[in-house]
Image (cartoon, rainbow, N blue to C red; front, top):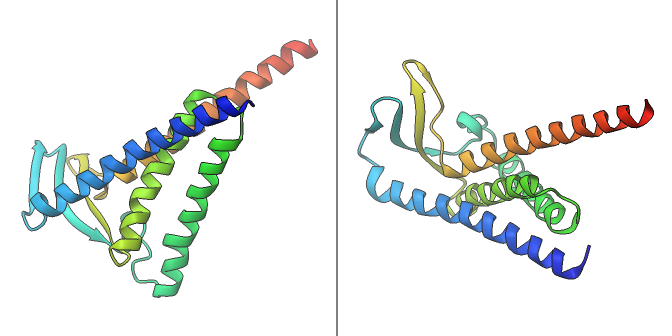
Length: 175
């Protein structure tokens, strides 16, 4: 990979990650200023509501009762390593398809958003989004969670498709 191409890929990763991070930070500041203490706010009927919550655990509050040192390792150190690994992979792999570059950049930006909360908000992540129909609802989450989830799902789908295409090409070549 040329230095110019590597530099361009790094700029793309920084821009997309930065946009995801900024969207998360801005939305959390908004949540603290305008949603906290207001109860449940219906945005699109009961399909999309906002309700402020502070989460000191992982997904859906799991691990909130863990001892603080273990929580620090599992919710700060491990995600930090994953975000750094994704940064290095996207910046230095040299052969990453554009869709996977974008999806991993979303994971990086969202991961950084929740890490920011954990590091600078005493281990607490601000959540305020909830989606669902009737009793079938998501947990309360945030923009960073959406970025990570979207990025991970798209990455897995693209990786799966790439593997299937590689298998088809190999099958054709062996026939």
